[in-house]
Length: 293
Length: 161
Image (cartoon, rainbow over all chains, first blue to last red; front, side):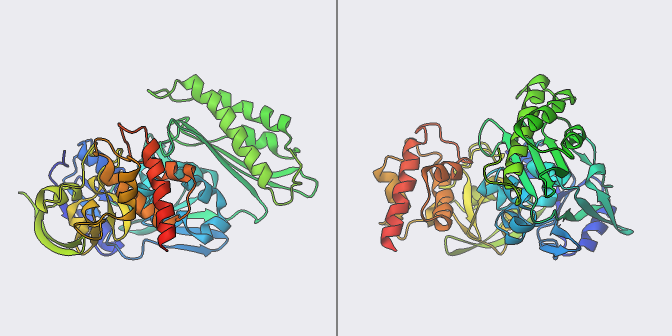
């Protein structure tokens, strides 16, 4: 098995990569290769040109700026997994990335590659939606920012033009006492999630929820922000009954059906995974009492 | 029409230089061009883990890389794990003593994966080991003796320290 014939380009700067994208027809970007290479090997894609981003300078970094963590598009998933900055500032990401593939694939796989591949059950996609990430895209006319809510335009299709590439992703940092949780159901460890859920919570001094983010991965063609669940939690004490009732709203979301699970099963999993993610988030609220259950 | 490039790299401490078609996977380059057939190919799309190598010290699936991407880099394959032609590494010895292989097809990937894992996690639990090899498929052993071998190897490596 081998990829179809193509011409290979390995630019050293983002500008050169953008110029190649503008000049070449039927070109594909190669980032970490953990999705693109299988698609090439199986000839699901047959590009005339591969533009390898692995030698482009300045696309791999994790830095804090303006109450957000900015991660370069070519940052390896491994570097995110072992980053102290990520663990401290966006712990949901640290939690979720353990579920991304395997050590061998995280060593190569990149955050930009995963977000642009946009598999609906990919954990990084779910986290980006949960955290209201902003994607920075560069094209021939400079850079522009895309809110992650507007990033998926269709199944596995990001809102970037053929002559643009993603250079970084910015994750707003939640207050240090926030709670976070990530729950996933898959057949085997490291598989894509059949359904996953990410949750973020803050509470006030009386233990009432002041801010909530609940996101479902793998249920639909793009991550679902469970706005109904979020709204049901605001102002409430998050006891077991409250979480259970709020998560019932997930049963109403339209779900995809495939070889792994029927839609009704995904809807059921969505209620269970969102509740589990919220239970984790509740337990991690810094101000919460240890006994609170 | 066939585009080729020169690839110069280090494999198991030895320098190689060869021409490679740009679409050639690193796995095929290692096996067919360099003749190092210890690296096995199972699924060829990143699922089975048999083709796992160490790329600049970190595990990677060689079926998911192009040979041209290895230019200037340092690779270790299963042939490079033993200290000499007559000795095995502690991990390899543990595999032999614990019957950690049957047909041997997945073994190169298991060994390279666990070499990196034990370097980074010298004192793993059984669960840690099972997660570490979750990207490596074995159809013979039921994994039981591979896990036992990995835990045994961790003890041997600790004792040697």
